[in-house]
Image (tube, rainbow, N blue to C red; front, side, top):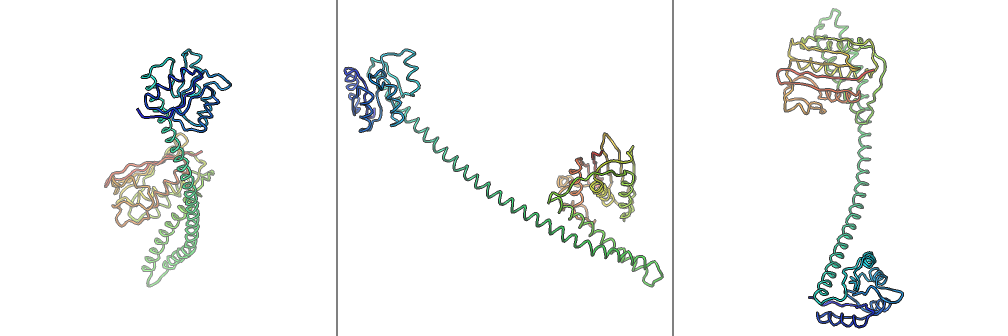
Length: 391
């Protein structure tokens, strides 16, 4: 067994002497023997001890328990209690001072050595645990400080990103608005050329043909700018739901007239309307984006001469519509990307488009509080289903 520096605190001189001999027999060094708590504290003030053997029932103002409390607080040295009694009252008194061990008098040397070893082992493990706890607390403090600093940097980055997004949105909006004015003038001029071409003119056919191309190109560019403007608002969280009373029949007619006016592949739109209310309350602009985009896509991706089925009904306070074509369909492996901005399936060929239409539809449906789903098979066609609550 390793050698320890031990302080004996015992007011019975015979017991103290026997204890000293037993400890010295095991090569321990006795740094002092005190018969009172006060003397024990004086000895510890001048000497370093590894362990204290403490009689519980010391005479004087400081008994063994009070002295142990002071030793624990001031020196943090393990204490082994010595007592001739093991009754419940005595045990209850010593528990609160967290002793390292407890020995009943009279003791044998083997038991004494075992108790001392256990006391030292317990003390070292407790100190190791306390050290680990302290290190852990320090790491937690450091991690907390690091996290706080990281959060500050993240907040700054997010603020910077927000400013950049606002600037980007303003640029997009300003540029798009700037384009719309000259495009309107070009469109008006093209329409005037169409009117002039109706008169007798040697280049009547050519003028009409090119004016029509200009008009179609301007409309396509105007639609693209409208889409860009929409996403400029969406990125700035400015797409708002503005409900108002609208006539359902007039709304459907406007959508159909617009889409039919742009048909170039001789596709026929077959319309099936259920029991629709005369008026509803909703955001007509957002609804128009949904229905016009979906119906235009059905026509665009149909083959020449095919039929597109458009149905609309009113069920449980919702406008429920479907748009079915029998055209090129959407490849299965690309269907998960369908609502992504600028996404176009690989099989669209030379058909014009920006890849923004369905993204706009998805955003509008979300703002309207509705749902959109679809079914599609390549070369067999696609059906979109929308359900939008109205009042």
